[in-house]
Image (cartoon, rainbow, N blue to C red; front, top):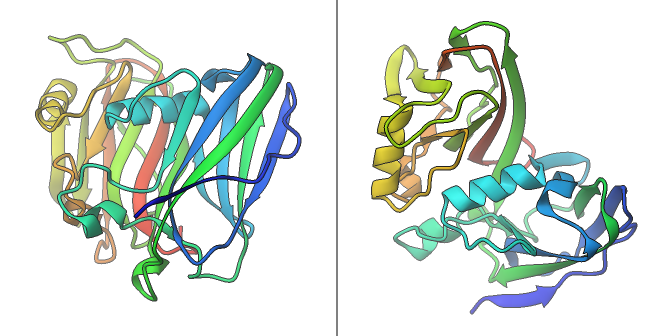
Length: 274
């Protein structure tokens, strides 16, 4: 049975500032957090940064508008007044596959903190709710779902490498949110193709149209100015790209014009690795 609990109150919920809370370290696995946005004016776009930290290490980092887009892509219910931080794969074909990535709060000695940066709100209110399941146990509970941010930009068109070090993590999805020309139902956007190579072998090579087709077959919902390299598009976490044996790993974006790209990496990893 899943447990639903309200989190302790956020401190410093102001028009512009960083609201914080410490997540209670119960003998359970934290699978998701839902933020309820309220007050005179507090929108997802006004949440300019979300950080989940274990001790001093940030293991989840995203702005509100980008998280909203990622959630919509995965088919998570959309409501203007709620924002979900999900550490699971809701549509995985098994319970184990669904819950791998949850934060077993007994697996490390450090406190877990949530920081929400707000900008331009008016008399905001912010309430958090957490979903808990039984502890996963030693070993399994040491693997968590991370969402990490890597900004990138280029002043030219063409093939553009996106650089980050995977350090042995299991890569689930690479979300690339760009600012240039959007895709249509019959055309690719400015970020028109992505190629991924592991040890020189191509493991993903698809135009935007092709990627969107295979992902929509599995009930994903492509979003504007968004390209997703989705290694687990069929919701099976065993399809995640293994990087522990990768001597070389390349992520190449193909652009028709200069652009700025926000890259968000969804992965399964040890808490203190990436």
